[in-house]
Every structure is written in structure tokens, then in C-alpha cells.
Image 1 (cartoon, one colour):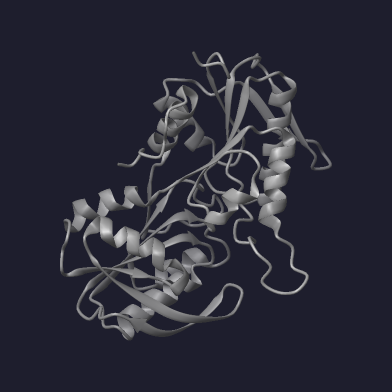
Image 2 (tube, one colour):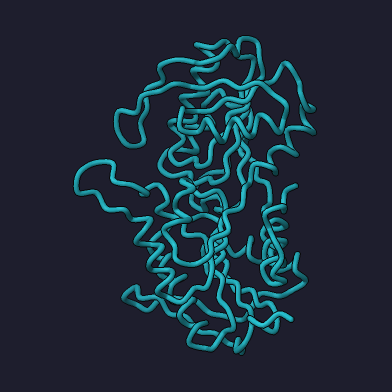
Length: 320
């Protein structure tokens, strides 16, 4: 018997409602009735229009742009559900903002990812469901269960259909040394060899490419990253692969498309043939459409994880 909630209820904040609607549809549910708005001074207002007492509540909310508004909205929604006697509250955070502030890079730096973890726990969340945390150790910042889903298998399906498995003319490339483990696991699933872009970062959002570790000459390369923010690093790596490494063509994929600043223009003008993103963050409404960017839905993955959490069965073999 499932004791923590009588049934699943899925609610959405304002950050990524289309994804929340798709998740609910995969669960054969409608989104819960809730209104999230702002007062004239910018304070967040949340009103829940249906009973949640004893329900297993899942709140879908990416903490993307505008990060602080969406984070505060999530915290208040969690508090509202807790005070309405929800049986259990799970924060479904497809993109976890502040994840890149996971350590002290220099003296007197905050560890903001830990602070956000504390806020979510204090608001009343019982568990967190997210995807591709920038740093896996963030799971340890929480005192509640955290399920960190992997999005790479969605890219594997796409590229197996496109190039086949074990194609000797295709290589996976890690955009930096820090992403090597992620790229290695990805390349093994595709049966491909791997190369690494060795770079030295001079300051935030800027990087200087130094060398290509591995022979990519004449190859079709797939760049794998977890976050595309300003796209400077990704486009710089693609340029190095072509100009220094002599690659034939470059494709790229990343879980989270933040796409801030001049990212769209950089991608459009780059040598990247196609950039695949997951829909954990919606395409910026104020940006022109980029012909090189395409999205893959994560709704079925989150819906299956939610179903398994509700039924209290393992999600560790979700992608086997």
C-alpha cells in the first residue's frame, strides 16, 4: 500500500509550463489548478484552487531565467502545499539554478548551491527530482532524497539513428577536461572514440582553447556539454576542432540551454552544424529563432520517474 499520498497531483510554476503540461499528459493527468503571480512591488503570490490534502504532489519548476523569481516561486509553492497538508511534496527541478556555484573558487566565496538546497528543504520539500546537475556532489548538499536523472541517453538515441553505432568516422569530443567523464560515458554508449579540447579559462564566460587531445582530422565530431550559457566555450571548442584538429563537421548537444547574452548569435555564426538541447529550459522568448538549434523532449523521462517515485520502485534502472 502506498502510504504517502492517495494520488499524484502535478502542479506547474511559470518557468516552463509547456514541459509541465507534457509531463502531466504522459501521466494521463491535467495540471493542478494554481495561480502564480506577482504583487505590484514584485512579491510572489501563489493561490492553490484545489484540495491537496493527503496527495502526492509534484511541482515542476526550472530555476532558470529569471532565476531568483522562479526560485522564490518554487519555495512559496512548496510552502503552500505543505501548509495545505499534502501527503508528500516533490520539487521537480529540470534545471537546477546556482548549480555552478558548488564550491569556493576563491577566498570569501559563497557556496550558493548549498544555500539553495537548504532553502528548498526548509520550505518543506520531501524530495527533489532533477536532471544533469552541473556537479554531482550537489546531491550531498540536501538532507532529503535527490534523484538526478541523466539526459545523455536521449542524445544517444538521436545520434545512433543519425550515424549508427560504432561508426569509425564519428568521434565524441569533450569541450574541456572537466567534462571528460561525462563524454567518456557518452562515447561508450555510442561505441565511439573520444577526444578532448584542452583549454585555459582566463575569466568567467571566456576561455582560451589551447590544444586538441586526440586525432579528429577528417572526422564528424559530436561535442557534449551539460550547460550552454553564453555559448562562448562551446563555439570556441567547435572552432578549434575544425581549425586546429581538422575535423570534417561538428555537431553539439547539451542538456540545459541557458542561452544568455549573445549566445544565439554566436551559435548561428559558428561552425556548429546542429545544436541539440533538452527542453529543461524553454527557448528565450525575447531571442530570434536560431536555425541550428533543435530540442528533444524530456517529458516522458520525468513522467516515468514520477510514476516510479509514487509507486516506490527503483528508478536506478530507468535507462537500462
